[in-house]
Amino acid sequence: MFFENKLLLVKRLLHNTKQFHSSRFKRGYEGPGRTIVDITNLTDTTLLINKCVQIGFKMNDDSLIIGPIAIFPTGILSWNVGSTKDINEASLSLFTILKPPLDILVLGLESTYEYNRVAELKKMLLKFNIRNEILPVEKACGVYNFLISEGRHVAAGLIPPVLSIPHKLETSLKTLTEDKKLIDST
Image 1 (tube, rainbow, N blue to C red):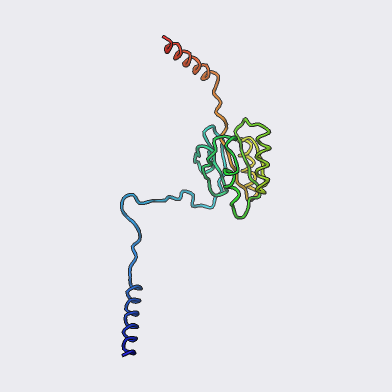
Image 2: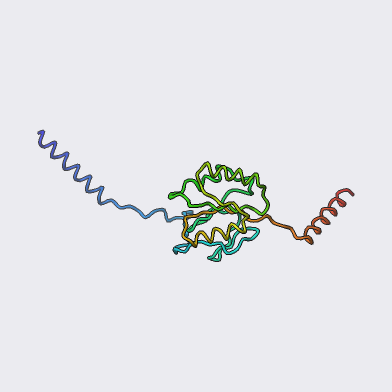
């Protein structure tokens, strides 16, 4: 009796194992609302900055990236800072977790910035043991491209230059606001 129970148990175990191995897996969800990922850059080309414009950056693959960016040799991320004032340890932490660590980090700031702020940024980066170069964004783009072409392990945090309003447009805006004040007062 004991031997028959063991034989029955082994038989069930083999039957269940056979069912497990013959089960089929579906490919995944194929209905509406599924997530689709398009990889746009499948080549090994490095990303270089062709032009720095007031809304973002024109890249060597003819793409236009709008707003501040964190750029690496093969990828670009949107960098959630609005100006130099918004850069802090949390926004710089993106550059601290890279393996292998960076040779140098290039920070490109909008055209107007204070020396005291640059000293604060250098102190933060020293705390993370990151070598850095902090420049106006137009110069930082060129330095980043040069370091990449040398084969250095480099990244850059770039903020587009401040929008400068031409004199004619500025006077037109003044006239519009004065006209609005005149209309509101009547």
